[in-house]
Length: 183
Image (cartoon, rainbow, N blue to C red; front, side, top):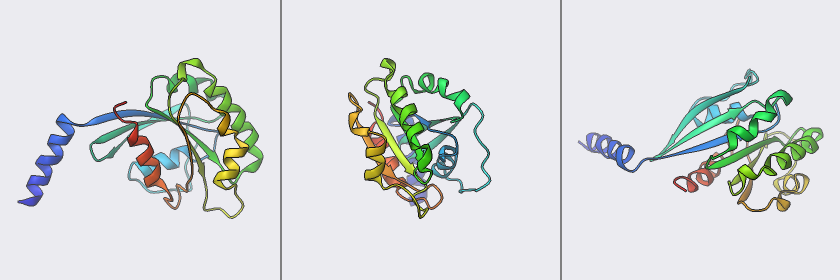
């Protein structure tokens, strides 16, 4: 009987109080966007992930909130599309490979270029330093400094270190995103 009650309760939540939010995940190629999205959607981490060509979308259900997540390719030819897919979303997630220190200046340039678009003003930004499980990596404080996140104005900016592979800190990611549902 308790199982039936739970099913009816869940249905009522989804039907009458469900919130859907859109999130766009961007970042340079090989930062781990697709792997993170696969893990958040309940799948397993795989090492043989192929680069995203263009974009893909997955829905992630967390309680009464559905996250409609856009994963945009990080190769140079797709970066011009980032702004278009970030317009009107509830949050922008910028993912950085914190173990590939040589690419951090390029990630900084792309991030600041994206945040300069007036059409994206006010949209919360979540920066994720992925691959925190690797030995040679930047700390969260170093990433904040290297990306000059404190200079990004007119929006909430948050930064976490994560590991899609080990599913480290993913609850904090989801909590940040769900906080913006319905806004």
